[in-house]
Image 1 (cartoon, one colour):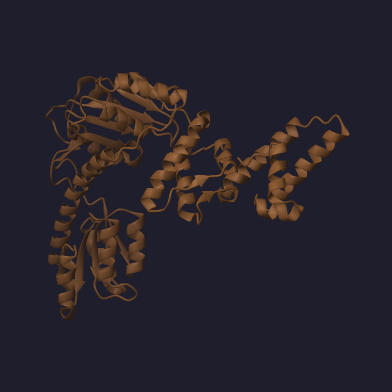
Image 2: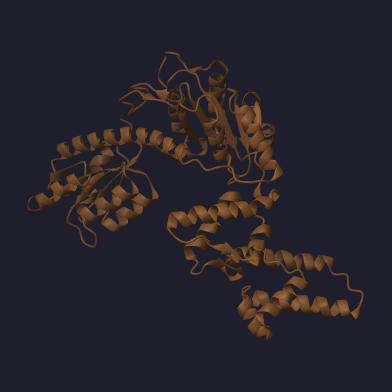
Length: 460
C-alpha cells in the first residue's frame, strides 16, 4: 500500500502523541499530529487526510463531536477511536455514527497498526470511487453556456457540429471563462454520452503521481503498490476523457501521452502488457500553447495532435453584452440555493458590472453576485451594494480618462470640469456612497444623480 496521503493522530496526551508519531513514521506512514480536536479540524479542512486516530475524551471538543465534523467535511476519511474502558459505550456509538472501529487504551501497537492499514485500504477504494461518483454528479448538474453575444452563438453552433464527431477538441480560454462547461456540453451531445466521462486536472497532480494516475500501475510497481490500480485512460474506455490544464503536463509525460493518442495503447506503470483503449479526448488550457511550444515547454508534435478541433472562449470583458443575462441567471440560481427572493439590480449598479474589466471572468462575476445575494438585506441591489474593490478600480480609471481628455476652451467648460473633478473627489472620500456624498455636497440625492449623468461619471 502506498501511504502518500497523511494520517492524523489526535490526543491531548503530548507524550503519547510523540510515541505514536515515531511508530507510524517508522512504518512509512506520512504522519501529522494535533493536541486537540479544534487543531485537528483545522488540518482536515485544509488538506487531505486518509485516516484519523483520535481519543474520545478530550477538552474543548470531544472525539464524538470531532467525528461528526470529519464526516461532514471529508466523508471518505476513516476514523479510528481510542477509548478508556469506562467509555466503551461511547466508542460503540461512534462506530454507529461512521467510525471505522474503536480500540481500548492503551492500544496494542500491532492491533493499532493492523486496523490503520485496513482503514487506509478502505479509504483508497473510497477515494477512487468518489472521483468517479463526483464526475457523474457534476455532469448531471451541468451548467449551460450562458450568453447571446455573437461569439457565444458561434461557439454553440460549432458545438452542435463537432460534438457528434470523435475527433479531439482543444478548448482555450482564460481561467474562469467556462472551459469545463463547454467540455460538458460537447460530452452531453456526443455519441459517447452514455459512457464514462473522466476528468483529470493536470495541474493538481504531482509529477511523481501523474503517470500512475493517467496510466495506472501494477502490483509491486513501486514501494507501497500492493494492488493493481487502473489509470484514468483505462477508466475512460469507450467514453470521454478531459485533460484540463494540459499545458501543465511535464515534457516526459507529454511524450507518453503522445503515444497514447497516436496508438490508442499504453502500459501500466511497472507492467509489460499493452492495453488497448478507445476514448475521445477533450483538452483544455488557459495557456497560449503556441507560445509554450516556442519556449520549449510544450511538445510541438503533441500540440498538433490535440489541436484538431480548436474552440476559444473569449474573456468576459470582450463580450460585455452577456453580463446582464449572466447576472440574471446567477441571481435566480443563487437565490434559489440560499432560499431568498430574487433581487433586481438598479440601473446604476448594473452599469458598474458592465464597465468592470472582470479579470476573473464569469467565475468572478458569479462570486460577486453570490456575495450580493447573501449579504443584501433588501429587495434591490443599488450602487452602495457593489463591492468597494470594483468601485475603486473603476473610479481610478475614470479619473485617468478625465486627465487624458480634458481640452478646456471656455470659462464655462472650465467650471464644468472643475465641478466634475470636485464631485469625483467627494465620491472617493465617501467610498462612493451616494447618500454620504450628497450630504457633504449639500445636494439632494436625485440632483447628485443628475450631475453624475450630466458629467458621464460611471460607477464601473
